[in-house]
Length: 309
Image (cartoon, rainbow, N blue to C red; front, top):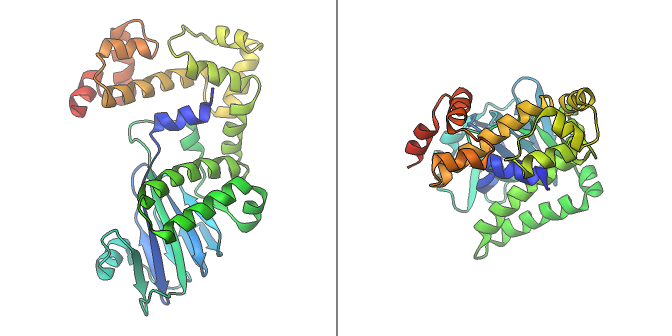
């Protein structure tokens, strides 16, 4: 089973917004924090500093891409010594309504010094996964990395061509492409963070990867630590230790969270009876499901269903 795809489906990864910018000197824009999201910036022309908190100042050259996960606030600027304007003020001053190019800066000219393609992806607020928790402050794709990852390079080129073509269907196409872009960047940039690398490696590990596949594919199975370990040909202790090392949680904790997150999605997006939802994610007792769900989310399944309705 493609575990990474199932994880991202559960997290409800969705591209929601993209736009082009034309920034003229002097310019700096402060992008506020925003919930469970990831932002990306692709430099098309000129250089751009990305300042994330007090610890990270990343310079984008033409062709470079940065993804900033976890909704972190950050500043885009030509140099860090330019005082940034708040994004909302920039949008208002530029009269930007979401269409065309965001033009801003000293001269505010379409042939500006710095041109970017920017995008925004959302995850469901109510779900979580070790993959999300493992994402570092940023993931950086440079020209050197693009040369070693031809599929990612072609995807970035395609997004750029689509953005500047502005033909019918561009919006739908680019949004789908940005979702694929996030997946490819996570896989390609896993070596930039030890924790993230461990999780990506776990998915392809012959034994831990098989254990993950079993959990995701057979949620209704009455799994125990011993039964999963037996399926993958490991002792209970070796399996538990390896799983904890690679994913940062216990196997049974992972399985419990996965079941409840799948249930959250079903409660919000379907009209399946709560008893059926419980059975679908591996709970034989609706009462046990309701207790576990309420303990995890602070709301009962009925409350989530009412809110969704």
